Amino acid sequence: MSAASTAPTALITGITGQDGSYLADLLLGKGYVVHGVVRRTSSLDRSRLGHLYADPAIYGQRLFLHYADLDDPTPLRRLLAKIAPDEIYHLAGQSHVGLSFEIAESTCDLTAMGTLRLLEMIRDLPKPPRLFHASSSELFGQPAVAPQTEATPWVPVSPYGAAKAFATRMVTIYRQTYGLHACNGILFNHESPRRGENFVTRKICRAAASIKLGLQKKLSLGNLDALRDWGYAPDYVRGMWLTLQQAEADDYVFATGELHSVRDLAAQAFAAVDLDWEPYVEVNPAFFRPAEAANLVGDPSRARQRLGWTPSRTFGEIIAEMTQSEYAALAKSA
Ligand code: NAP
Ligand code: F7E
Image 1: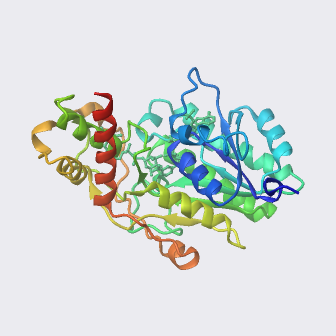
Image 2 (image 1 turned 180 degrees about the vertical axis):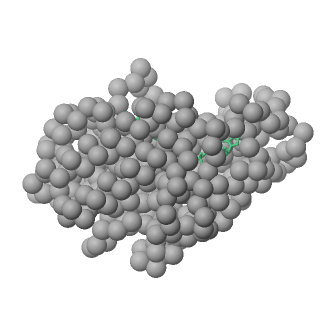
Image 3 (image 1 turned 180 degrees about the horizontal axis):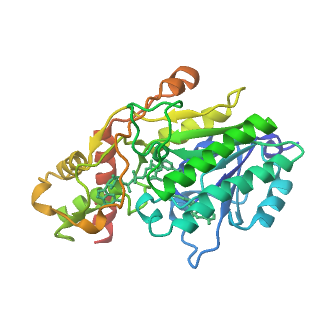
């Protein structure tokens, strides 16, 4: 029997995203065979997976991509029957909170109903795989207590948060009712050089580097007083894997426990390229949200105690790495 046929098999939905790409790196490094779900797009540019495509020992050998969409159950059902994964990491979704106010129906269809459809498919399998669901601190919305734990009541304030609340509850219901090994990771914000360009960390780090290089003059932002608990994405995908290695399925908060403002973030990013942020930043009401989550800071004690999970990077280190990465990329292409 070949090594590949005895290796554990994982399926990742959302493999082309920030977290999916880091998770693929992690699982391949642990010897898994990794299958990823991709949707049909007009461009084949899947840049976060470029290093894996380029490796002939990986792509087509231990990494396989399959077309499917979360609103089209038949291809997914067939895929699950064919590859019989040991573990599923369900990360696909419309992940932008601000945009969820503009495209509320599709956000909810994909995030809420897409998760339920997947649970229904898993429930019917002869040997149901373990399932990790990427839930979010947006569940908590405007919580009365801080920091938040797995037991804190949910008060979502965005369509995205409400859709994640539905999906998270369904995962728990299917665990309790059908005995599935299905877990929620309640993920607070996590960032990296692979973060999408319209999230505030990447937007600010990219602008700081661009302004330093003389390629951009100003940066327009929304609420500078907004506070978030920002961690490092590779730590959070390690948490996903650890979650599924436990004998008992359960839910875990992954967070740093530290709050920083968008203002702090701008100061750190501009300082990384020896600039003062204030002359370059302007506030644009277009980037304010109809409703803003507040007071979101997580208590990861359960993950620390049971999984041995701790964050590896400070906020300052993450922002410095992201800004330097943008500077190097922009300087190369300038
Ligand atoms: P991301 O970079 O936006 O990636 C989202 C992934 O979902 C991409 O691979 C995307 O494919 C895929 N996708 C979107 N719509 C799809 C569809 N209709 N069918 C199939 N795939 C689809 O998000 P991320 O930061 O990696 O986050 C991963 C998950 O964790 C998301 O569910 C997000 O909501 C959740 N989460 C993230 C954070 C965070 O701070 N990053 C915090 C809490 C929870 P394309 O590449 O084709 O767009
Ligand atoms: O906003 C404020 C904005 O879009 C962070 C997703 O991964 O984490 C992420 O959602 C804060 C908010 O992330 C701009 O109002 C100010 O208070 O980077 P963001 P998010 O909304 O926290 C959660 C946990 C997820 O689950 C999501 O998938 O920054 N802000 N000015 C701005 N935000 C953006 N995007 N752009 C601005 O110009």
